[in-house]
Amino acid sequence: MEVYKFGGASVRDAENIQNVVKIISDTRKSKLVVVISAMGKMTNALEKVVNALYAEGKAAAEACLDEVKSYHTQEIISLFHKEDQVLQQVLPFFDQVSDLLQASGMEQYDRDYDQIVSCGELSSTTLVDAYMREQGINSVWLDARAVVRTNDRYREGRVDWQETESLISEQVNELLQKHDIVVTQGFIGSDAAGYTTTLGREGSDYTASIFSYILNADLMSIWKDVPGILTGDPRRFENLTKIDRLSYREAIEMTYYGAKVIHPKTIKPIQNKGIPLHVRSFVDPGGTGTLISDEIELNYPPVIVVEDDQALVHISTRDFSFVAEHHLSKLFDLFTKTRVKVNMMRNTAISFSICTHDDEQKFSALESEMQDEFKVIIDRGLELITIRHFNQEVVDELKKGKIVLFEERLSNTLQLVVKNVPIVKRK
Ligand code: ADP
Ligand code: ASP
Ligand code: MG
Image 1: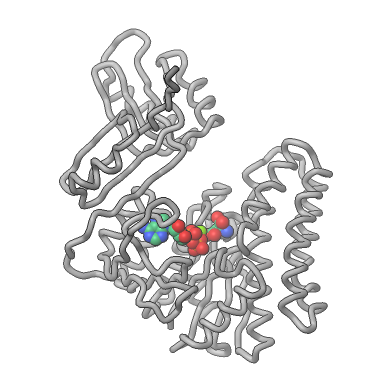
Image 2 (image 1 turned 180 degrees about the vertical axis):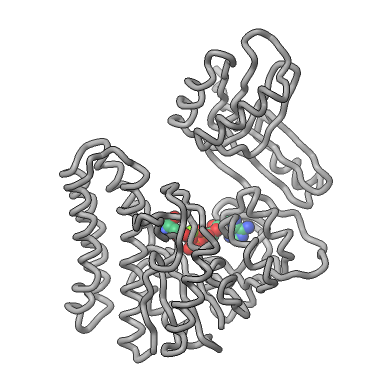
């Protein structure tokens, strides 16, 4: 069997859903599990519902929810000849969110977030499954929450592999005996108490990898709006080339440094079972894409990964004592507690600095936790640039117009934390 994953851009509207279903029927060679994200930017729109609930209250949240609901309704009307039945399947997901908005005590932001935002994947998969069945394809809808079990760390659910393995093996294999295709949601799962959980933004790639691992897939394909993995993000750079083949190791390094094309947790499960991952284009399904598989290291061209919205957090001891191991262990406990993720770090005698995602809320939590012992200075508005397989020409080009605050060279990886040079107007 094989696993396909389609992201938000590929199912953003009725026309794109038709394209996805065509790709599935044209390319399918065996039984298939299809993992799908929410339509287009619907996860962002649903995040607005949660934020409106907490910042402005129920009426504002309902207004935001209405926008999401009417988007889905319109796309259903344009996709189906007989839309009533599909609307009856999809609208209850929105009613459930509405009920939650009314009932929420507004005490558990993260838990409410997961109950609300998951509605995007539940709706998109219902739509795609219904459209496939209308086209005469033998598909069936599976609620991922029935098989993907996580802990109760809402918004960052950690998969309980043992439980998930037995649930997926049992239920999905049974469904695949009767059906050609199982359609399910990326990104979502449930905890032992029955609450919906999510695996972290962009987590659908990871879901596909969980299914691939457990079902021993022959191949996993993720269909993107790019021809494959390129030497940089095309939204940022020109003159990029496609990398035809990548080792798991190289792929894991790229995603670790923040290459947005694949979720960082995706590679490990498929590497562990030697399942190849094909990154393909839903715009040009005949293209060769990028094949990620276990093979000897190839000669790679320089690959650039840029992380925006970074900050340098400089932490120093108030009494000028050296930053010792016990300080570091305390600091790392605080990072875990406040969910601050370290992208790069460096220490000097009395200071320790990290590069992390710029997040006001997390920083104030961190500062209040450490103010007795440490002084904190934060440099904001930065970029973290990582160049794998760097050469001097690429490095010089990337440094143009930037002030370099941090630079670190490893054997084949160079990292820069930079700030744009301010434009000073001359008189
Ligand atoms: P999905 O629809 O599956 O969620 P994403 O939008 O998350 O897909 O990922 C695809 C995007 O990743 C591309 O549109 C591209 O802008 C971006 N991207 C970042 N780095 C790379 C890279 N090295 N190669 C290809 N695409 C990249
Ligand atoms: N819909 C979720 C998100 O936008 C998950 C995903 O697309 O992978 O983050
Ligand atoms: Mg994505």
